[in-house]
Length: 414
Image (cartoon, rainbow, N blue to C red; front, top):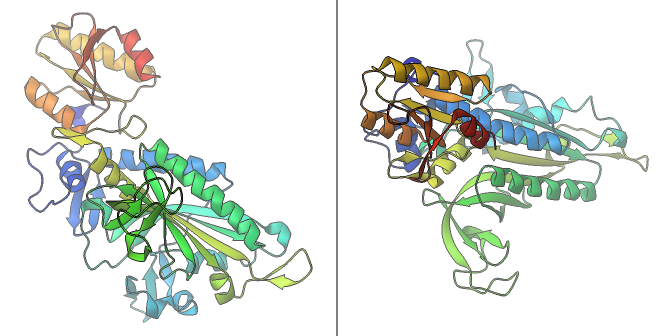
């Protein structure tokens, strides 16, 4: 992609109303634009990052047997009445059509996915079943804030599992917990599985996956020596208390942002929709159900909160919209411009994604500032000074190297 043709450009200053790092940097660097509180347009760079996160999540969901579907956002009122969600869930967006019929915008998909499986699960041989989608969700938040961390419209993966027995459910539940931790590790984040109440979904204990960040809205207590972590709101321990799990250290308190959750839904929804199957002992039973959510757009905001400096964003390699940011200096010199064009062609021909700053009327300082703000992991500079080589620099440090294009290709393909 040539920067001169890029749909959006960077801003010299962040929006005045931006209170969090992710809102400031994502807007200033041209990744998103706020339409209204809690609702954002994802611009070309931002959409690519969102797709990169989405693909990592998809790969890991497929790995544990998840089958991807795409469900409607617009739901009939009667489905929500059947689960009593229509009158009890206060964040539900409700719509009325010209025909007088009422609908809900999906804030979760139990009311759609449960009846969907009714004709497809007849005996225990049809179980277990895991289906998921990656789609937009809508919640009528009273205070949409913190950039894309807390929105009224957000991008999310939700997987639903159905099981013959509680034991089978628990086995998959543990698999999902481990997979979530693997996903967050691939995203460069350290997440803690935090015990919490089931909220509106279930009376059972659920797990929230928390990432430590000052922009977080939750307070957690965690142990540095083991995996113990609990939401402060339901905790029976307090800061400084000896860890009840490993007994080695006192608990620390920190702000954190919820990026995922897993819920044991039991038989609530399968009973609501009267879904039964013939069990292995010949009896008719309601399937056990689980729900596993992961906020993809929210994760994007958390990553920016973690990976940044005073110059801008620092994207992890696997998430960056482009692998390299090629900058040409002194492009009015035809020989320099010609060399830069050849480097661009070689990189793209080798399958390396490139954002090529080919602008002729912009100073070196401005190009470097934009490169740092945008945060692509590798910056390559072609100039008269670099001669037949290319200046190579990683975004997270100040070290530069003069390399041949072939040497650059070896580094970026690692």
